[in-house]
Image (cartoon, rainbow, N blue to C red; front, side, top):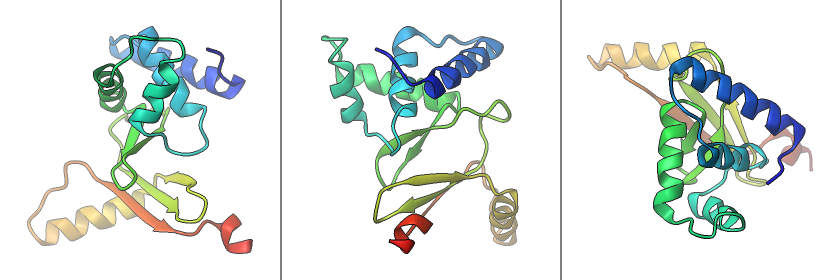
Length: 150
């Protein structure tokens, strides 16, 4: 299965990240990650399964879910709960970073932010209530600039 040049570059980087952490980006995990990275929009697990079955005829839901679990643990993908779908995130820094997502209701495009001020504001608000945030993913729905212009 061939991926775009951009995706191949990101997959190479993901492999280096995994090697550095002492974990293995198996062929299946690499293929699932590549399928996610090659898409312009978030991808659901069953869409991934359908795509995998074109080359892995015995692929079943647990196959995809195990790969997705690994990729999430390594911070290589994020799950968008609102959409029950996954987006790639190949960042060499902290793999457990706070993530914020802007989801366009019109076209479905998702943009990841990494706004440290927003993360600090959430931490500060939580602390005022005696709560400690361990991990936070913020999903905001609205309309992207391109759809607003159209």
